[in-house]
Length: 373
Image (tube, rainbow, N blue to C red; front, side, top):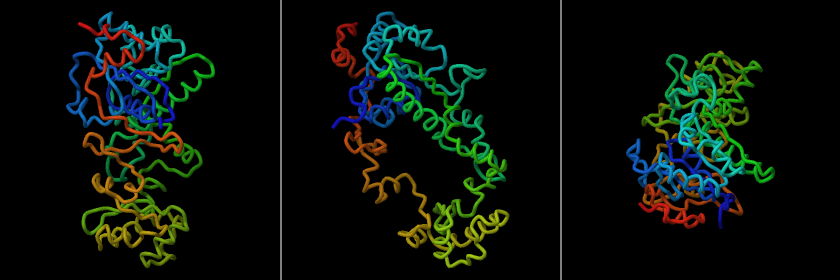
């Protein structure tokens, strides 16, 4: 069965990171997403456009030289037949190509024009280069991460690039596409990774305002300050995630370890958290990770093993849910979330640049000969 977005047509200008991630989400959910590769351009990352380019899965490709009048006209004709467009260039690039929102909305007033950038379409930093770490660093969230006695860590680029950027772009596109169905009018979706990463931290802004979150790292409930929300090393060099935040779950942890509940008093005395964390750290170092995982399996102590990549894909729970799929020999996460009536699927692996150009034009009601030399 087709996914919930079946029938939607999206044009994606091929870029890096969060923009293709958003396009992947839409394609996973059934939208027809056409990748527009720049003709003759060599990839910036060696694995791009290969079977390992997981973010490119499920879409066909057409290669166009957008600096050439002929190919730019083809692009505008595709836009005229599309529901949405996604681009991830710096502000002004699409305008210089003659493919900015004004030109595209003139060709298709119902078009949803998605713009993915780090800093947004306006503001003093809009033209500056940056990456996930830069964007996250300006939100306040990075300063709150990591141990108290070291610089903030370098996290994987999940928060600003993919959570605050690509995922919110996908949400913005779907929201605006629903609005266009009602109003008949398209619009621009300005998805900035700084905005999105800040939004992901909304709860903590509330905690700060309410006096439940201080300015020091590793001194709060959810930043490793609490001994009952932390990671611990085990005897075999592997690690546990220990997170019984609620009192009833905390009791299961303390009972399971045979500790004194009068000493391990949960949140009653934050000043004692450091000492109690050290006690737990010493205990967990006495046995290998899977000993502790087995001890707490089936309980509500919220103690779980920290798995590596291979273990995660082979985990029985992931296997039972089909949380990973193999496409062209590459193990990768399955589409998410799940839909009961219109399940998502990966249609196929990444396409080579331009592999479907003539086919796409024919399917979209355009003359394939327009791609002839």
